[in-house]
Length: 170
Image (cartoon, rainbow, N blue to C red; front, side, top):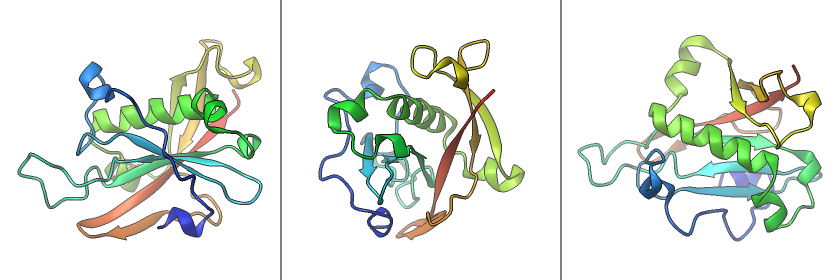
């Protein structure tokens, strides 16, 4: 519902035929790993959808998962179709970052303690060279508040931070 206040969401989410956790990737709280596509006027947001799901099958059932969802905004994909998004650099980078967040068990505590964070992710063959470090990585700021985008929403078992990735040039 929070994303619907920003713009219409696609009816279908980007997800997997086989859950990545069954292929050695980090587990999400209830095994649902998906990405929502939001289309505000003139832009596009790809957001994780499942990092904040309540845990199942554990003694942590009354917590809001990892307490966060992550997203990237990429206006250049505003009119892209499902196939174009699924194979875009924007999806690849938010997917990689979301898997890291799942592996860490969330990132909200680190952002609360340190403010904005920075990170590099492998991105060779995904972005033009002007966006890449000499090592073929893309640099990001994590948690820069985005104008007219929610930063936190209240859910039944606690708050959920909506954390933006901001792509940097070297």
